[in-house]
Amino acid sequence: MGIKSVLKGLYETKYKAVLLVTLLLIPAAFGILLYSKATTGEYFQKGVSLKGGDTYTIPVDQYVPVESLQDRLSSRLPNADLTVRGISEFGRLTGITIEVADATEEEVISSLRAEGIRIEDGSYSKESIGASLGASFFQQLTIAIIFAFLFMAIVVFITFRSLLPSMFVILAVFSTILQALAVTSLIGIKLSTAGIAAFLMLIGYSVDTDILLTTRVLRRKEGAVMDRVYSALKTGITMTLTALVTVTLAYFLTDSEVIKQIMLILTIGLVFDLINTWVQNVGIIRWYLERKERARNG
Image (cartoon, rainbow, N blue to C red; front, side, top):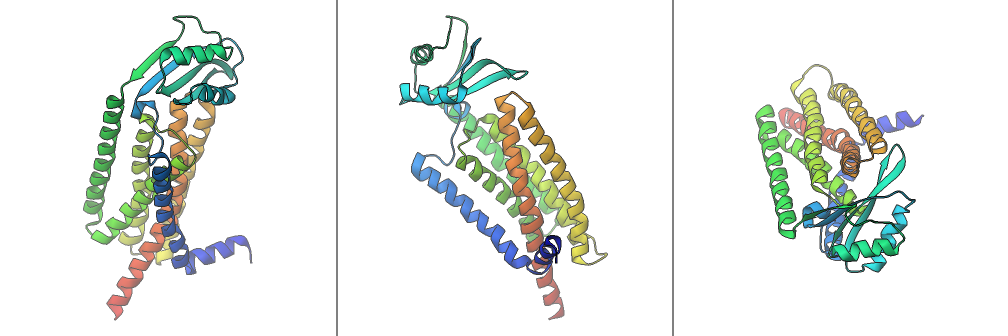
């Protein structure tokens, strides 16, 4: 018996056990976020655009070890929260950006010069975001996500006109967002406004595949349940894998750190969307249909 047959057997006959594993990912994600809150004071790390601080863009015409530079600057500025990134064009380093909070301009520039980086007065740019403005951005984006979920729930309910199937879709989308957020927290991504926008994009993509599945399985009556599942799965997997390849290539090909963060979050989210749509939601829908069938026959 090949691996494909074993996996198909698990998918078709042991779906409740596999469903339980996917449901356990939800408390695991909550655990990661709560641990981050307990140890750092935040559920996830925020970038300068969300918590306030300064962003320096500095052109360079010399070799700069970007990764080690951040560690050395952190040792020189122990009270500062900073991130160093390189700016490249056609594979050649042309500048660096430094996002920093709790450090003055004089401290940052003098520390860079002490590391041997040549910086002429007036050759670099500085953008500042106040703490209150960053907090305001974060609050507004949080409200946007809440309203996105609310309107998504309304549209889903109008589409299916049944509470439980609508709740199944919402649970799958919520699981995807929660688990993607937990992974970004776990690997130390400092979320910017662009990162929050990526989560909004992820809501739209995730609900799309879940509605595809639910519509095919619940509204169509021809064929067995698993035949309808496989019909939806073929279309949905093709959509998601195409998107995964696209965002993964974009992550490696772009030099923009903003786009990199968006693409990385989308990649993580799309992987979880595969699990939550085609394992979690399929398992819940099958359980729901089996209960309806037993109630009808009982």
